[in-house]
Image (tube, rainbow, N blue to C red; front, side, top):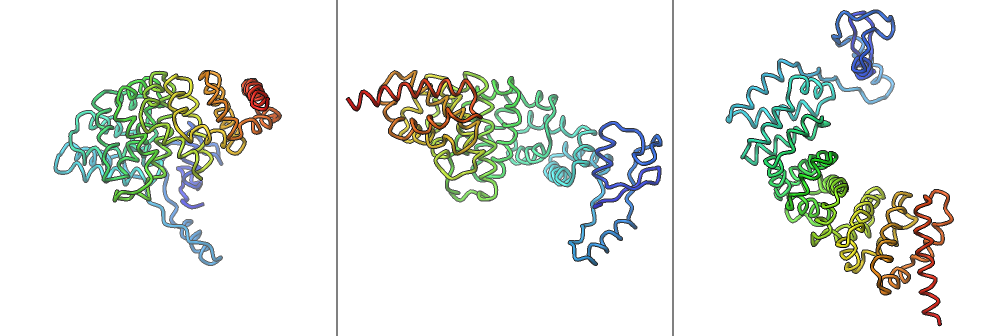
Length: 376
């Protein structure tokens, strides 16, 4: 146990375990099965001290003394200060600190209505500093559908544009990217965000950024911001018109191809391929991929070395580029960079889906015909 607490039945449990039990709707004590008269959790300080002393005696790290969950009345008092311009920033910082401490704090905050208040601030706030703090609190939560609905309007989208373009603070851009990622999981929100060109451009800039340019806290947040931006772009691709917008953005395909060619995490490369796969379903996307010098090479190189999903994406991209371009140069380039050998291996792998094998075999036939014509 790290945080022993007692129920009204007198039985002690670790706080995280009993909270999960109660949150699942159970109304009885797990040990005695008595119906609980209340769900108050009383810290067992004596047992906690014994555990801490035992850890020290046995050479283990001493468990820290846990912080008690924030009282709902305390949260309400902080929320009242949000409406005071002189106290709002300090109140938001306090809410952020509470939200970061524990899941119980976040649940207590949601129970007293913090999320609707924060969403309202996004709708009506003009101060960039206040918006920064609001975003810092919101990213601590898994947003529910009601909150996402409130955050869907054009005024909130404008706020997201401001935060994503706030180049002096990478943490602010990260928080905005996380919020956009969360909102884009909803198709209606993805459509709304797709109408905002600056948001898409800012997400792409977070994917492609390579130097800090003096940005505050760049190293701490750049990697997380890149992942959140990739996820947001991937979600946006669920809407067909968004794919065209992303494909037409000048830096989108170069940024994805460059990231795919780098030594980043396999999950990141898989996400890059997922976006490129979606873009390749549009004529604009195929042109952008074909026009980039290293894109096709990077896609072929990723075959068989990233993941099964990545293989599916890569084959789909190559298949569309080669079959729909109608140009021998594209086929020849794919052949030169090693697509033929990799596809031969791929069609023999059990984990490849039937649809992917069909596409791979069609490509192999095209490559075989091209090789024969070149040798004759």
